[in-house]
Amino acid sequence: MLIVEPPTRARTPVAFFALASLAVLLGVGALPHAAHAQWWENVPRTIPLNAKGEPDLAAPAPRTKDGHPDLSGIWNPHTNKYLRNIAADLKPEDVPFQPWAKQVADERADGSHSREDSDANCLPQGVPRLGAAPAPWKFVQTPDLMVVVHEAFSLWRQIFLDGRKLAANANPTWLGYSTGRWEGNTLVVDTRGFNGKTWLDQVGKPTTEKLHVIERYTRKDFGHMDLEITIDDPGAYTRPWTVKQDLTLLTDTELLEFICNENNRDLAHLPGKSFGE
Amino acid sequence: MQNKSSRRAAASVVALTLVFLAAARPAHSHHSFAAQYDASKPITLTGKVTKVEWTNPHVYVYVDVRDEKTGEVANWALEIGGGPNSLIRQGWSRDSLKTDDVINVEGSLARDGSRLASAQSIVLAATGKRVFAAPIPTETRDANR
Image (tube, rainbow over all chains, first blue to last red):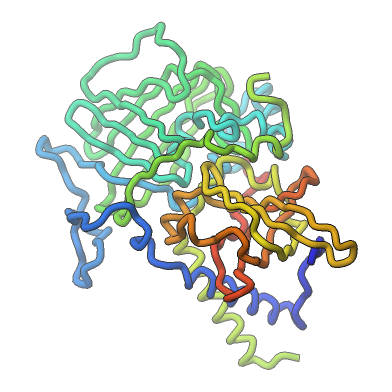
């Protein structure tokens, strides 16, 4: 039976909403436990547990032998909203667009250019958008190098902590070149050397090759991390601007392979030109 | 006319539902939902599964749907909000839905007019069991750019 119209309404709006909510509740509540479908067994737990034997996400943040905060672990944004709109918590006037960038963002905002987004083409989403994707990512920390392993599109970043500087003629890339330093309990990451082909979010804020991203990671406790991001792109914005996000530690999963181009059927149904046209 | 107790009961169900939804992890969306689908055009389909593509970036389910008025059968594509990884984390597997299963689907129509929908609810007709639950993503589409 084919019906292309809204479902039949219940007698009153309240009753309809209650029935719909109950249906959703039963559907979500019936989800089997995640641990039933993982590929591993018997992972030794090295995370603090509370009195109930559950992961204690409020336990103190761990430290490495050299005294710095240990940011290791699998992290995940708890919301899609910054993937959708990195400035979701800002007032519109707080995004300091240059006129051309404002025009581009306005043209993209209704979704009519979605096919031109690198993400939709299974190309890298860029920094910092990659970290706002719902697919989790992992910090692997050593004294001189932080490796970021992203499940999204099976990508990785290197953040060098050994004091090196970025060469002026570094070849432009999707994810740039990252160096980091500790400021107290905060890891400050500078990333430059971008190719200017990525959007900051799905609604389409542009970037240029002049993009410089500053990320500040502060692990508040075992299970929570603050992330402050400054967008410094003098090619598209009149001044640096800053947003805040927060991350949650995932204790019951692992990163999984994610080859986006396996079956990207969506692209043909999205409006806009081909990527790069 | 409803009485106060039924309204309170309804409110309780709604509140409890929001708690459960808040606990669910976001599914990965590698493209804009709003650009591809129209949430204001809900569609209900019933038919037999012809193929399940358990692939990235999104799982696709194909279903033969018969129009009762004309008798014509059309094959529809259903995009599941998450890819295999997010579904695996919710406890589903590639065997959760099989070819020849009869399903009832609620979703949103594709904007381009093709026989494509984003599935928000798939229920097995034989058992009433819901699989691949995927509510419409919350989006602040045009706000605060």
